[in-house]
Length: 107
Image (cartoon, rainbow, N blue to C red; front, side, top):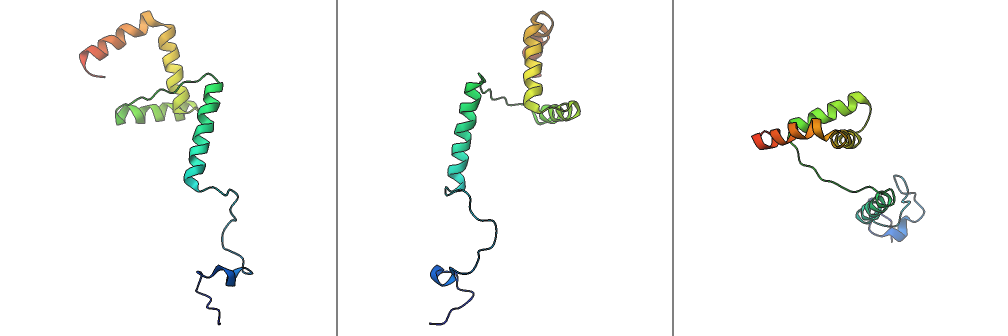
C-alpha cells in the first residue's frame, strides 16, 4: 500500500514524522483546563478572604476607570476596591453625595 503524504487520517503511517507545533503538555481539553483554573482561582481567593462582587456600569464609567487605573499604575479591580474602602472610611463625606446622586437618577 502506498503512503499518500496528504492523508493524515491513518496515523499509524505517520508515527515517524514529527507533528507541527508545540507538543501537548496537558492531556485535558482546553474547556476542562479553564474550569479547573477557575475553580483554583476561586479557592485561592477564598483562602485570602476575598469575596466576588459583580458591578454593572455605563461604558463611559468603564472607560474612565480604565484610564485612571492605567495612569495610576494599578488594575481596575484594585482601583475600585480602594475607592470603596475610602468611601466606607469617610461615610459622613461620601454617603450624602452618593445618596443624592442615586435619588436624582443620574447613577
